Image (cartoon, rainbow, N blue to C red):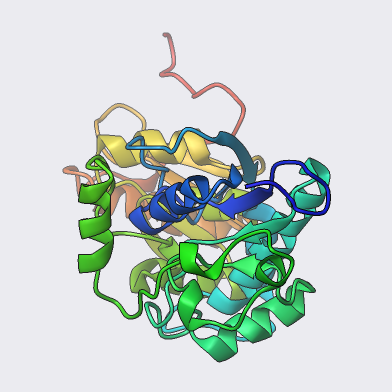
Length: 317
C-alpha cells in the first residue's frame, strides 16, 4: 500500500516480541501492503528471544533494561500481581516505538496486542490511557483486534484499511493458530514463560533489592541466579545451587561485589551485594559452608575476592 498523499510506501514500526501474536501482526500488515520494521526490546527481565519464525522484515534491537529498572523503582500505574509494572512498561514501549518511527520516517506504530488477552494492559481503557501517557493517541494499530477498536489515525488517513484487520478477542489462541497454519507458519514459541517480573519468587527479590537501595541493572542481573538471602546491614548474598548457577553468578557479578567459595573443596560460589560488613561477610561464609557437603569446616576455609580480580589460590600453588 502506498501513502495516497505522498505516493510512497506506508511504513510501520511493530513492537515485536517474537511470539505468535506479533508474528501474525507483522504478516497481516505485510499482506496489507505495509512495509514493516520489527522493533525488538531486550531487557534483563525478558526471556531470550525465540529463534523461531521471523517475518522477512528489517529488525531493530534495543536494550531497555535501565528504563525497566526505573519503572520498577517508581511505577506511575503501580504493579500487577507481582513486580510487573505492565501499564508503565507498555506505555514506555509505545513512546520508544514512536521515537523509532520518527527516526525511520514511519507512519505509525503497531503491536501484537489482542483485546482482552491480558487483564491489566489489554483493555480498551488501558489502551487509551497508555496511548495518552506516551503521547501517541490514535497512532497505535493493533491488527489482530483492529475491527473491535476505534478507528486509528492511519485508518482515517487511508494508510491502512479496516477490512485488512481482524476481530480477535480474549485469551484463547485458536484463531491465531488457525491463521498461522493457513499461512504456513509453524515454528513459533509456545505462550509459556514471559517477563521475570511476573514470577513471584523473582518479584520478592526485586522488592527486597528495591527496599535496600540495591535496585540496579547489574545487581538484578546477578539476582536471576542462585539462592537469595538478605543479610544484616542491608547486604544480599546469592549462593549457587549447582555448577550452572556458579558460572552464572561469577559471570554476572557486578563491579564492587565480592565472590566467595571454599578454598580446597567443591561447593557453591556466592556473590555478596551491598555493603560487605564483617557480619555480612561472615554470614555469607557460613552460607557457603552450609550448602556444601563439608558442614564442619571453619569460616576461614572460605576464600574471598573482589569481582574483577583473580581468584585466590592455595598457598604454594
